[in-house]
Image (cartoon, rainbow, N blue to C red; front, side):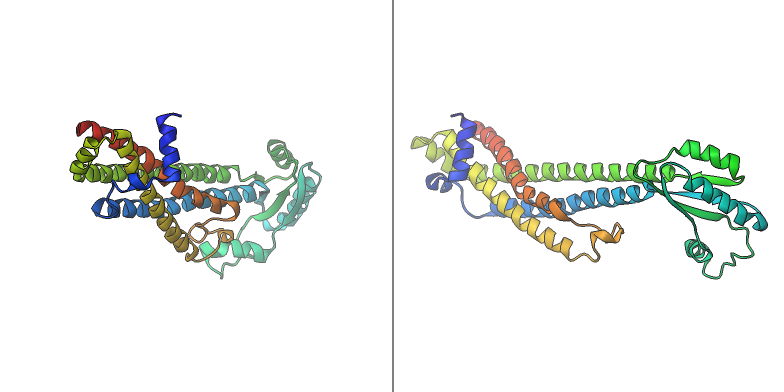
Length: 301
């Protein structure tokens, strides 16, 4: 069995004699616990933001992809006839599930956030909007544009592609930033645990010297530090993850609201990602402490 496998086995099984090498308390112990808890707390929010952004952007993009809009600009006395002609074209187009003209009240509601509730649509040259629902097979947007342009003058098809693209790009960038944040959080935690391990090894230099005099090998001493700091990081990350999950649950709203700020959180199987944070923290602490112990023991030789 390799030395690495032995360290993993000792980590899971435990060694009472080796555990006595590292003091159970002190500044290094508190620093490891606090660092792991704080980094896990931040990781919960970074993970929640990344997953929520991807989920909400996917919902928005899917909703936009399933609908299209036809805008008809024409004189008031011609608008009704052109609307009927556009509906005939749309209903006879393969891939269009349904098409309907928006009522005056619906168009009023769409314009109300920008122009207020007293906008007189009956006297203003407001275009007629037609909502188009796309079938599962989809329709040929370019072909439909050409047909509408030939049969319904003043009709413009908007398949929402220009709206979907920025949403998808923004979601990808925020997701990438979230993953980068997780990497940075893991790096900072590993660095702090490395410093704590260095401090503990330096503070126990005399103990290490005595252990060597009585025949202890460096591998035995290193395993003691690796096990103690790995477990401290694991339990610190457990605490931080639980506090972070509690804070997420206290946020207002639910992920189904469609609002980014109220949709930050986890749903379904995504909650399982939280279980990986303590394991990831322990893994980072294992390798960081293992490397620090090897360097320090060589320096104390």
